[in-house]
Image 1 (cartoon, rainbow, N blue to C red):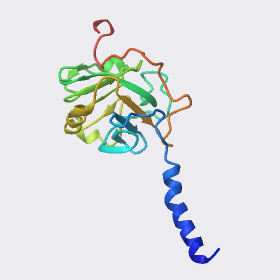
Image 2 (cartoon, rainbow, N blue to C red; image 1 turned 180 degrees about the vertical axis):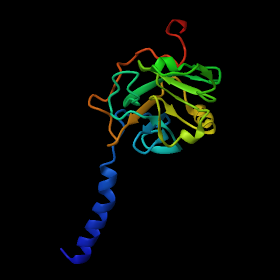
Image 3 (cartoon, helix red, strand yellow; image 1 turned 90 degrees about the vertical axis):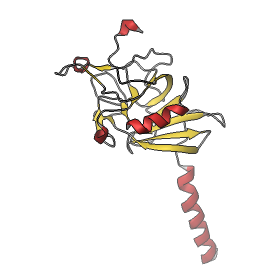
Image 4 (cartoon, one colour; image 1 turned 135 degrees about the vertical axis):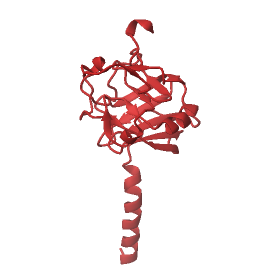
Length: 198
């Protein structure tokens, strides 16, 4: 093999190998289907259409806890796996954050969840929501929720519908073994809302 062919082969391998090793979603979206990927290691939320067309990208804050499998609501971990959107709350400003839910001191307060909230099926009341603390976005700062700037979530919700898939990945870009951390159809409750009121 000549030196120029060898150099061309190295160039092709150098370009194609990273593409071939990129982690594909653990589901096959339809060509027009929108879906969300949250990368905890990059602190980014990506909106995709179809298999791999990137539509939008936003900075986020994720849980302060370290790990890939959420076992308890108090462990401060943002769970990993594939989830489905339950609903969008178009006005999350009236939801009440109660520190007692996390065994923390303080008084309940409104406005913490920002302008909008995307609930998805999970047993820990984890959601994607806006914030009254935009400087926390881009950090590991939450109890496990995915926090966005209000202007960003206001744009995102135009694409979000019940049943939409949310894929949350960690350090290696993969979901934990089994691909899910909550059984399908597990009821979801918004933060600060009593269980018996839904």
